Image 1 (tube, rainbow, N blue to C red):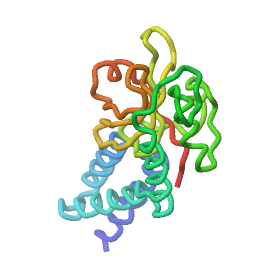
Image 2: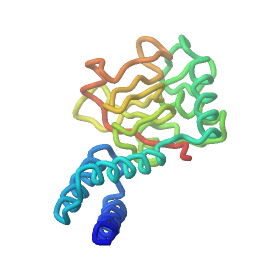
Image 3: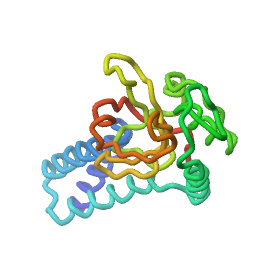
Length: 202
């Protein structure tokens, strides 16, 4: 009876932590689990019970990261549209379909699927939902400073793929290569990354 009572207390603590922290990032999840572990130890639960409860909590949180089938199809189609323009030339102020600048490219691709984005990368940065770097997924917009590191947002691309460490590749209109795919690890972009935004939500 005492063990059941203790488990009930821990579950209440876990729910409270989840609601307060909202655990949107991996770091937040880890912090929440540390708090849960400390709370469980304080009321004397055995290690196997603690481990099982934490594993169940992790599994429950991970469900929220799964992309719905409908959204997955949409994002795949969006990236297929983006890739169909690979190699097209860069032209400042151009919005497609034969030539693009960076924001012209992202707004053109999204427009094919009914989404309206500003023609400016700085304005696009004010659209959508902010996404932490480790939470980026395909289809998200990523923003960079321009050639001058002192300036604000000056470039935008569309994420092609991303991993849990925050590394990603993105398709964009580069001044020297036109429509191309680059990696976040490339020195030029690594030093200029500003943030990510999500336009397509589940």
